[in-house]
Length: 226
Image (cartoon, rainbow, N blue to C red; front, side, top):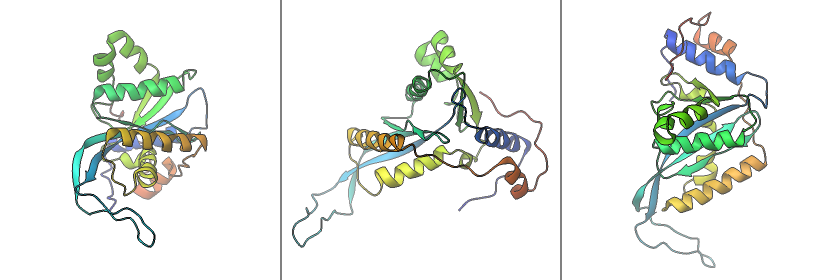
């Protein structure tokens, strides 16, 4: 159940910043890209199931065995329908760096990349410096203009929609017991979505936010930065 957020000055400032970026006209030189993580539990069968046969559907025992965990970085450029969603073994700093490098390579000709993400300590320059060194880390971070959703405001990130689509269409109710299987399934799903240029139409605007949450003007407080 969705809860009404507490609209303090910082929440409003972050929300309007994100909404204003999402409302920007499409510009290939300044793409707006969104990113979010989705944890995944790897599950295997506890006992053999029953294979499909003439007159008999396949059956799977409801019990399962945990095979560990993994992560999926859900990455999408909503207006252009470009997708870079991929699976990783974990969500540690080096994996975040890998995700940013993927985005930077995809948009190598961009003047700047507007990156929308939630406000975690991981989502800043520190992992880049630790993984790549100060010079290369700073150079990579300089490719991006970060825009952080407010605390408890991840619903403002279109990557949440990407995560929901991936969960429903790629993972579903299937049991995936190895990272390799998760990686391959995610890679195939992302290739289809990217080939079809599946866009996300974002309709919630700053004007609607002011009307829905009943405040009249943007806070002058600067948004949270890392």
